[in-house]
Figure 1 (cartoon, rainbow, N blue to C red):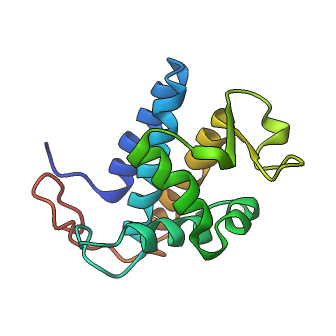
Figure 2: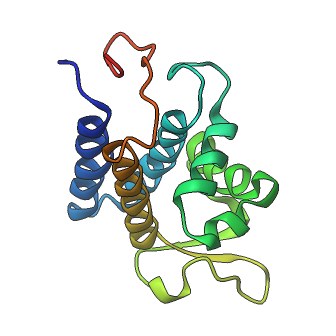
Length: 159
């Protein structure tokens, strides 16, 4: 893999790849990838080396706090969204009892029903993740984020 600038990496792997998944309607898998993208975006935002260990929750939370709409921030109070959605989805391939996954109903996205379960539109999650990635991209384009070494042999950021 050739060396990529942060902007190229974000555009290619966060935005374009997620758009391809969405276009092909790999909805459940795109939700999994969104969680990984959120975490990776947090790695671009903190001051630690890109491959620093044990940063999953911190980076997910930072990304949600800085890059996502207020509804996600509210849902992630005390890392609730991280634990109840991200961890369940990535580790158990399920979102548990706290969410109804759907591929439509964008108007209900992140609203709770009478039992406290949240409607969760995968299409809206994809769109919000892509918007967050574009915002991150703009921060690099405006030189508002410091570049850093990736710490990964396949990536060569900050060179």
